Image (tube, rainbow, N blue to C red):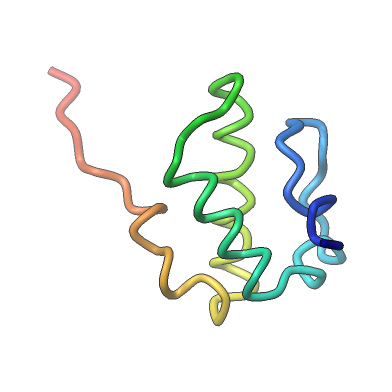
Length: 79
């Protein structure tokens, strides 16, 4: 599958317009599944995928409408 390079869990991978343009529905579904499974070697790897899905939601919303629940943040009280 050619999309494996799009889904790298390395935090050094930049989110570029070219990378976002290369995503399709299948790659977005894989990314969402990874986030749902939440089985990352480090918290930073999960955060990198979350930022990637967030960027896709902003720049390619047609790909992420089924996965917006993964981006919702619960309100919290710091007290």
